[in-house]
Length: 223
Image (cartoon, rainbow, N blue to C red):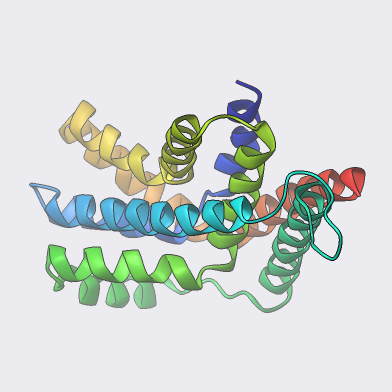
């Protein structure tokens, strides 16, 4: 239960306006939502694969101090600190150099993506997980929380599945609105897309800075 509570800040830090805008736009142009579902599924599987590898790597660390080897008590706080610093640097980069595409540029980019079929979108979203500093930092921090909980292997895998699910919840929101509200949902989604497109730079910077700071403090406290 404590691990699940610690996942909550990570799930909030996983809010990515660009991906939400992308899924929302696909839903608006694809009545059966196959491509939007392909994006969400690809993202989830990519997170799950990387999380499994990260968890496996953490299992190679000894639980108790061992001569000449890094142990878990030394490694886990360092992981939180590094993940926090990575997010803080990403926030600084967003504020200093981040640019919000114009409505015309966004429309052109989305139009090109709409021409891609579901398998291509699935593969692209799976692979882009492995080059996303935000997603990887959050996932490494999440797997460190799972390892810190010291539960059995089955429980670890269940927690990993829940962690990855919580990290894609912003993408599930448009799907829920679309299927739950029908035509009214389409109007709401269009408003959401426009609002997030206008404010995505600020949203990214605030989310990255706040939760990056939280992870850094957690890491420093454990050193």
